[in-house]
Image (cartoon, rainbow, N blue to C red):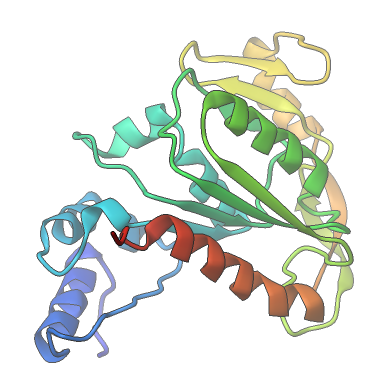
Length: 238
């Protein structure tokens, strides 16, 4: 189905076509990227109201920057910014997300979280993500971390890892952004840099990182995601 534009209205039209043409007794699994059209409030409302969709079992998954979205949507201030009711994602899956800067809040949604990380990732390193996962655990969210020891960033790709000198990485950054109080501090020192956060956010960036696939991580990641989603999304049976 090709349409001249790709807005929320066209995506909903696509979903209606699937709903109309797929027999009711069959399950439909739709995997989409992190394009903002797919996250538009109109799309959320359509999905939540549809009788074939269980609004309590919708999860979010993202890769790299999309992984940041998967993490941040577990924070109540971000959830409330886009939803005007009590809907929330039932699961959050982030693959090699950027965790140099942590967004924090007094409340999280509490939905289970899964982080899949590359042990050799020098673009969005694993160590700050493990720390961020600990923060989410302490805030009340079940958070699982899986690290593939020999994997770099973009480990699900088929191309071999290569160093890209032009890539800009925030692996040297360590901001903590408090969404409730609108303050910014350095995680490492506790220094309040609210007034200079913009400058710090530019100065801490550096160039050069390695990206590319890893056969073991590429094999294991789908299995790890599927096992996690089966456990947290499948309806309970009695």
